[in-house]
Image (cartoon, rainbow, N blue to C red; front, side, top):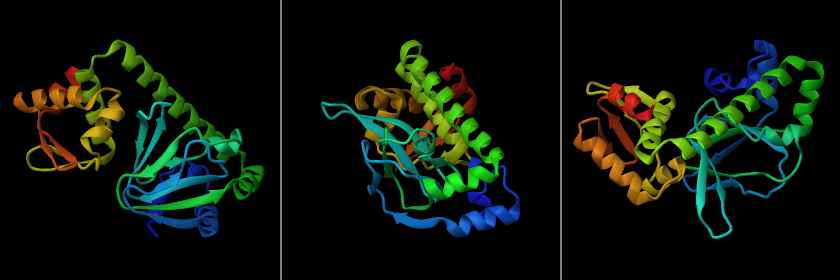
Length: 225
């Protein structure tokens, strides 16, 4: 098990090495293929997950079947912690967008951990606050930022977490389809594709299969503002 990746999760931030090892030993492992659903919106939530490998998308579906992606999470990130502080139905659906390995811990075990280590509760609450802050920013973007600006910002966010430097720029293997990228931005696929084509024509990026090569990060940063 890659302890370094797992220990990036806020859950482990307040634990020493011995406590981290003990906690990981108590966590269950699961493996998902692309398209597998871990849980659906409305399911009862009783477990927190940490991503070892791969990517998970968190989304919500409207009554008419439209889907909105709230977040794309990768190695070291965690999700499902809301059920610990507010037991109830899941507020989102979690789906693998790549081959994914997860570690899970039940709420009962996690509550036992929190009773003896209040510092863990503090970092979990900080993680929730950070996610709420990001949600507020996304809502503001939907109101005040045009689609090309939101596309540029989404690509930069994906780059910060999944990008790797290559000779020509930054290669971002996001594993998303064009439809999923559009759902993440909150716009139609046609409008997002038009923005991507415009960026490619300007020489800011090059589209790859479920990936994008960022050629001019500075121009994208300006467009995202």
